[in-house]
Amino acid sequence: MKKIIVMLALSFGIGSAFAQKVKEADIPAAVKESFVKHYPNTKVEKWEKEGSNFEAEFESNKVETSVLFDAAGNIIETEIEINVAALPKAASEYIAKNMAGKKIKEASKITDAKGKVTYEAEVDDVDYIFDANGTFVKKEVEKDDDKGDNK
Image 1 (cartoon, helix red, strand yellow):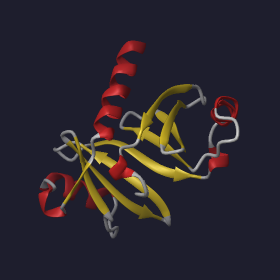
Image 2 (image 1 turned 60 degrees about the horizontal axis):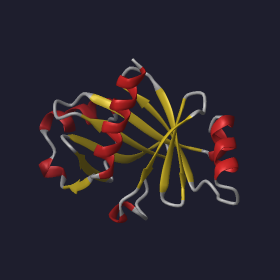
Image 3 (image 1 turned 180 degrees about the horizontal axis):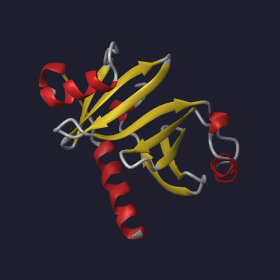
Image 4 (image 1 turned 60 degrees about the vertical axis):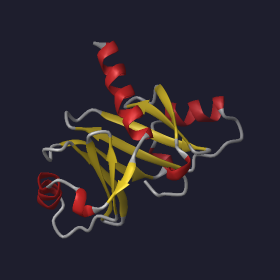
C-alpha cells in the first residue's frame, strides 16, 4: 500500500514538473463547468495543463489557491497557500535541520480528492513535500518557467 501511495505521489510530482500554460479556450467544457460549480463568482488567473490534467490558479477569500482537475472535471487535488507558521512542527524542524540558514519562501496545504492532506514548503525554488504529520516525503525542483509564478 505504501508503495502505491509513493508511486501516485511521484506521478503527480512528475506531472507537476511539466506544467504548461494553456488558454481558457483550450480547457474542456467539463473542467470549466466543474470549476464554476465549485467556485462560483471566481475568476481563474491562470490555467495550466499537467499531463492530461488541468490546473486552475486563482484567489479565494484573498488566499492563493489552485485546483487540479481531470479532463472530465473531477477534482484531483486542491492546494491553498498557508502561513509558514501553520506547517506541521516536524516539517519546519526538518527544514531548519537540513537546510540551516535557509528560509521557507511559502507554504501550502494540499488536499486530494479522498481528503488526504500533505504540505508543501518552498525553499530556494525547491518544493519539499511532507505528510499530514510533517514527515518528509519528497522534493520537487521547479522548472525555470515556473520560477516567479505564484502558485
